[in-house]
Image (cartoon, rainbow, N blue to C red; front, side, top):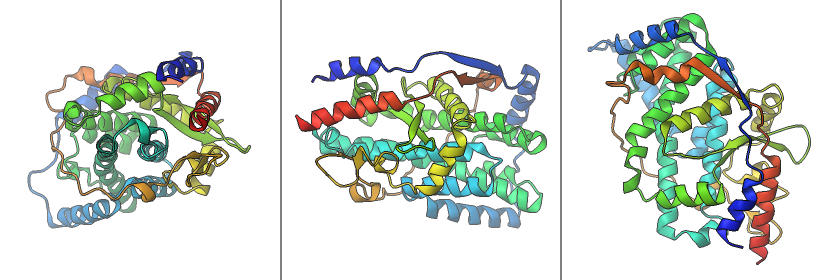
Length: 362
């Protein structure tokens, strides 16, 4: 069976475009946020207690930013302590999927399609994005916890952590309004613009063009899946990824995934799944009747992260602020939220795994 025929079959199960758009912030509110962000109040000189807090958080971030499993676990642990910050659970579930993509590279199928050098290059790209987002977002979450504990805001330290001044206005608004939807969309925007500026814009030098074309346009492997439901095997909610290289597309995807994950029919059991199944990187975590972390004849091989990839060396990326010189038009995603009318991925993924099982037999 050729890749083109596989793609044609999978398109039969493509998620529809039926969705609802609801207002989020007014243009007036966005104008205020923009003014707060470009006015960045961070001091040039930090006091001793600022530096102590900075060093404490920096140590925690560095020790937790070892691999996809440690990052993913930190997001969930934070959400358990701070359920009012939904982005942290969204980050946990999306980071799980990043881990699945990393181990897919060592699966029976992809290890035959991609050379070892290509596998390593794609793993490095996925892990770099995962690590960069954690390095940027986790200090913000810990600063928020510090505010909850003391009542004193230390978000002027964002600059010292090389976090975009865009987040200055976003956090200032949240601490006064408690608008968790706006905070979530702001964090989604920030993380995607950040990796666009610091990583994705250099993709031609990282050898990922083949992955973008093959995975997305032909095989449609790059889907974000949220296991949910009370029945076994669990159902899958989520969306397919397309046009990964476009930051606007990724922001729209993030907003839709947020609405799906916190849908009343998805969130309670998706959260239960996360609590009951520690992230291993293997798709066996959610569908053990299809996948196995051991290479068995009657299962698709989906290894654990630790069994196929070592921890990467610490990454060094540009500290450039993506928000510098941006016009107010960049704030547009804060105007609305998307509510997808369709979000089930169960049939599509069942079809995909059936095709892969047939390929394995051949």
